[in-house]
Amino acid sequence: MGKRKTQRKNATMLDSDDDNSSVSSSSTMRSDRMSVSASEEAEFNKDSLLDEAVDALYEKSIMLVEIRGSTREKALAVIIEAFNSNLQQGQQFVERKFATLLHQCLNSIKKGSSKEITLASHTIGLLALTVGPGDNAREILEESMIPLSQAFKSGSDPSKTASLLECMAVITFVGGNDPEETEKSMQIMWQLVHPKLGSNVVAVKPSAAVITAVVSAWSFLLTTMDGWRLSPKLWQESITYLSSLLDKDDRSARIAAGEALAVIFEMGSLEKFAAETKGFSDGSVSEGNKSKEGFSYIQGLKGKILNQVRDLSVEAGGKGSAKKDLNNQRNLFKDVLEFLEDGYSPNTSMKIGGDLLQTSSWSQLIQLNFLRCFLAGGFTKHMQENEFLQGIFGFTPNKRNLLGSEHMSYGEKRMYKSPNSALNKARTQLLNKQRMLSAGRNFGHYAVNVGDEDS
Image 1 (tube, helix red, strand yellow):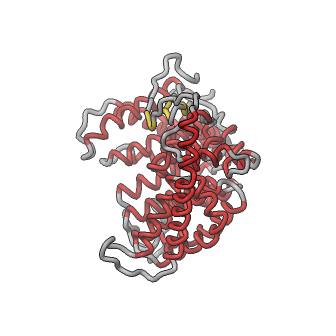
Image 2 (cartoon, rainbow, N blue to C red):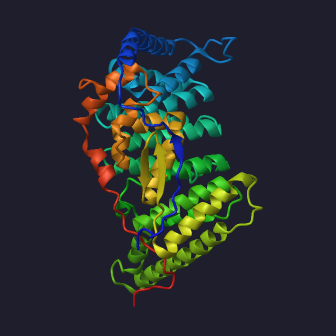
């Protein structure tokens, strides 16, 4: 089992730059020198704009006619754009204003409108990716968990909830050092679709958008966990629920559930669960019967999931209103089916600038898709310059492609070359979690054999 000999490539051109000639003329060198002052002035203006944006977070929400929104909302949008478009500028900025920016964003989450909460939580996630693993990322996680958890309870705007979930997932991914912390975040997410109800609590049915966001964020964190740590009870609850989502009308929820199940099978967690339920806890007859019943249930659930995946891989349409996503669903479940039946992991590749980023497991693919969606327009920039993300995916951009990119200003190119740049300094400060996440992806590949039982 493993990778298929003939791999289906999912190639995506994110940014294609022709290789620039390495020959420099005296005229181009003079032109570069003449552009230095203008570039430095532009960088100064960007820094000033960020400072003004952070200062604006102190202001009360004043409606401005020209932007039809609050001062804080506009300021947060400016910060997000800056962090997406210029990683090195963002790294330098947070060296000066890290604590101020974090706590003002947390205030927005506690007291702001749904839109402000959405922007503030996204900013905190970007802040975590910008600083990378370390003390600052730990502080982000520790300071943010309570405000984020409380914000889930205020209102039911799907966009706000999705942004809060993404934020919690990202800050846990970057700042979480212990499996217990990751599991805690996963449990908080799971409560949104499976709340623990008291005698006076009425369950509120989550929307399809919220279900999709929960499953996606939960799966993203699951890729960092050792599945053997989680309890059989949690596995039974999650696998049963994810299987039920495959029958739902919403296509996005089905796709998210399919990806989550693929990760679970890749980790071998279902086999581990089945093995545990087959064993005896104390050797008694009653416990033995209970265990055999649990094992039979898991075997039946495996068969059910396999049939569901097979049906969705050839679905003719009719379920869900987004017809344009039908091909995406078919392709995903064809890959899941091939993995479940034959153990072949999906192999994907995408071009970033002049370099190829490749994945060869479900865990890597889920991480890539989640971070690509979160970063949106800033994904290419972060993959080219963010040492933490490069370590996660084993991606090493060609320095020539970066220095020759027409999208880099002269000042950015000079900063990249400098041994004192934030990027080069970061190369000497890679942390253990980065190595763990990049090297610990050798999960076992398990094919589903519904009829196999140990004699």
